[in-house]
Length: 318
Image: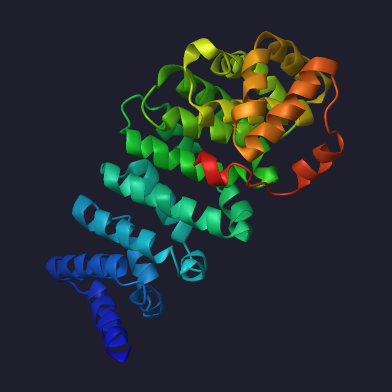
């Protein structure tokens, strides 16, 4: 272990070299070591790599940026505290997300955010308060020229942000609902609709989502996904049910009415999930069906849903 510690210190010391080639070589080695040797990750972080890696994200060389971003992603697996405690780390990620010409850098930065958000719930309000990060993630999913992987990584990061209930209103205010609805309608690439509906299901769990969903035609789109004729996957249909259920729970009387009216049109699809969905999918479909049929659901869950972080969709949505 001591040899690994000395190696980490030696490589990190080279990140401050005046020679670009020396810095590049050190970054390449740190990227590979942090990828293949989990034991070395905390040693690299403890050697003081994170400030240098963060600063490198402001550089002009795509290759150097790619190595720095990938190393930060690797460190986020087991050295999250070192990243989050580094001054300017999130600002550097935000800068790279919005300014880097390299899709690989964008993907690594978004994946780093997801890694932090999904593992530590205490980081969710911190990252969610960075409106520039949220705005950039939404810009990625609305860019028709963005690579599929960039969109998927941005969706995963948005999912992590939306796990914290108080972040959902911020996402609504930044236009997340129409962005997600548009993505669901226009993009049929593998996995993207599944991930987009998972994020939308989370965001639907706030009072502010009702008006945004109505203006964007979100309830209609979700209903269409439950129609047998669309051929949507089970995962997509379960996410659609979850979104409608959360809207009914948290969207007030208007939201409940919209969900009930739409649910009546796709009652066969909801009923099918009560029989053939996953365990959680069956339970949610059954509650939604009850709302559709007689207007009543489990109202006691509404307050808990609003106040507590829910990871219901983590295991099968993203």
